[in-house]
Amino acid sequence: MTPALDLSALLTGLGRDGDERLSVCHRDGDGTFVVELVTVREAGTTAHKYMNQDCYFGTAPLHERVSSGRGNAADVVGIRELLADLDVGPGKMPSFAAAEDVIRDLSALLDAAPTAVVETGHGLHPHWALERDDTTDWTDETSPKWCQAVSLCRRWGRLVAHIAERHGGSVDPVYDLARELRVPGSMNRKDTPVRVTMRLAEAQPVTLDRLARVLDEQEVVEHTEDRALLDPVVSDVTSWSFAEQTCRYAHTMIGGWTKDKPAARHPWLVAQATRVSAAHRYGCLSKDDHATAVTALTARFRTLLNVGRRRSEYPGEVAGAFAWGLARAQTLSDTHLRAELGQHAHRGQELCPELAATDLNQVHAVFRRWFGPAYDLDVLDSVLAAAAAGLVLDGDPVNLLVVGRLRGRQDRVRVHAGRSRRGGYLHHQLRGSAAVGHLLQGEGEQRHRRGTAQDRCPRRAGTQGRHLDHVDGP
Image (tube, rainbow, N blue to C red; front, side, top):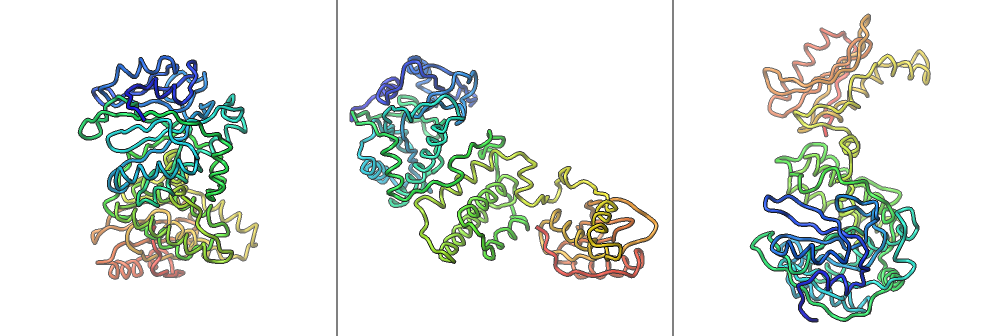
């Protein structure tokens, strides 16, 4: 390989057409991410203006409809290369030598050397050119060829992750068609500024057919989500933070995995991995417990693989599931995020509109139609109060006192928080035709508060009541 500091040389080596459109991005002096849409022919000149800054380029041709921004996977109209992002450092690749070993092993599988290896200062980016044929270009994201390319790209990412694990490393296995990588010759200013360099070589391109055969041979199977189109990102992971203390819901979620017996193991893994990232975004998990969740889910999945119809873990399967879950959690609306997490709220959070007051008379009317006029609605009201505990409480286990229905008044379910003289509590009130319930939270004065509730509530609300001990909040 020969050294080069030229984006134009890299794009030429990858066989890019001069009229193809791509993004060239850089961070300006105040850290703002600036995007310019240019042709391949213009890309080298444009990137040269930002050689002393963080500068990136889009690795795939974009649809002509993209007039601003970087575009996303749906905007890609062709695939030109295979790539790998091999960062070196704690929790990544253990050394540059290990990263070189990954490139060597991948090259052996593909039977082709990379056209270029970009040295970012903190890792390596190998680029393998793809041979152009009727499978590498399409008109838009409705084409079956787009779906096929997306699937192959994601499976390739899992293969890279699998090979990296063999060499004691960890890499991000999510490989998006619209991936952007550093421009050779630019500066990496992530820590101490360092020049991004590149080694170019004359190498034979790889066909998509060859890639598909390699993935099949290595048992990197296609999963349902591999062909899915994710929605745009609404909350980038870089804006998330860990909680100081893990909420009760997250503890219950993690503990519940040991009892789960899903009918389909891989979809269950992906769904739970998505919930882990959703919990991170929602502020449910401390940093240590996030790692605990990943370990616990991985262990349970591997146990399930040996239950019933046994099978081996597919290469990159677990890493790919967590990466997919993270990618999807970034695209969820706030409403969908809450839905992934049982609609629970933390202290100080307002409940979402979906949990606003509900007319219990309407609920009762439905149950009357189902079960007849003799059905004891105290049972229903107890269930509703217990469900409310699961929705709105976090922290320690709680005690729930539900008192029977009152006569004369008819109102709505109301959920509200308050503080007593003896400490914090949450009060769920089912008024009128429903029961009155008190949900008491905490440990230090829990026993005293429980006794107080039992003394006062029956006198105020009537004698029909039931005491449900240790109803866990989330």
